[in-house]
Image 1: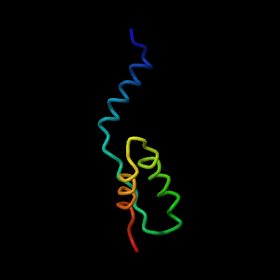
Image 2: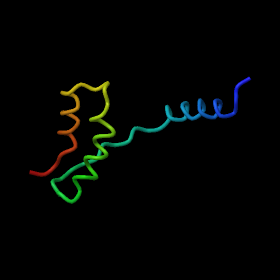
Image 3: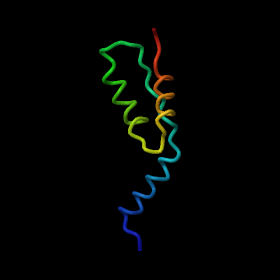
Image 4: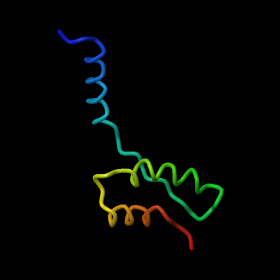
Length: 67
């Protein structure tokens, strides 16, 4: 017999599979917004071990705008 906690936890995993991907943050060069940008980028891309360095770099470049 499954405990309610285990049932609830496994139900949460199936719901996670249905979530839409979170869009990557954009950074336009405003230094006041960098910390927020980097915190989001780091969690979503940089810390992931299943993504190679080149792919991480390409994701980073896609988040940058301005000159």
